Length: 216
Image (tube, rainbow, N blue to C red; front, top):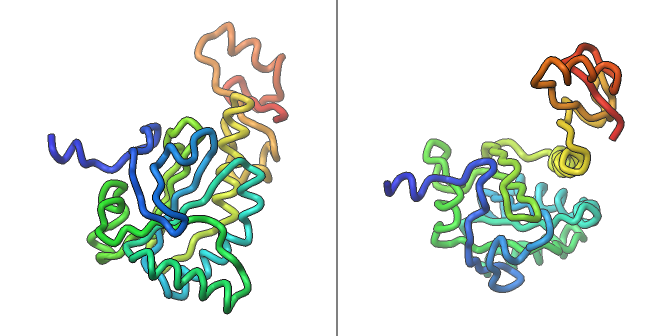
């Protein structure tokens, strides 16, 4: 029962309630971002090269995330003083002000709760990404090893895709919005009965009754 209680959250779960210390002060998640999407991402450590490129890249897309009603919040097992000094360094040396908060998880409790430390990859947090919707539900989870920096454009694409899926009641194809078969269209859920299957090809563009798509 104890292991079950402490199991990392999964897709479709509610994001666990967490009180955290950040560079913007104390926050309670997911309450802080109620009514908004948010991306919580962990990084191995402050003052490291790959993590610095990631923070710079996230900030470069900050306005795009804002346009998608999405907030960003970082995390690592560092003290808040280290975070503050590091984001100051980024602004002073790379001319980019980090506008999103960074969680100081120096005791590792948040990382443990979210499954961000993988013993086979050391004691630092891996490069994890949690995408959470306005209702506080976890919609996507990504893990990258410490040696591989994230693709921020893919994270933006995922949010756009999830929002389009919700709004239009469709699934999102590979490489959307530049899918090799249907372009920027959405995929219709396959029919579950014969009558609906017969109607599908009359209502939508289809490759077959089980593979139909529509404009979104």
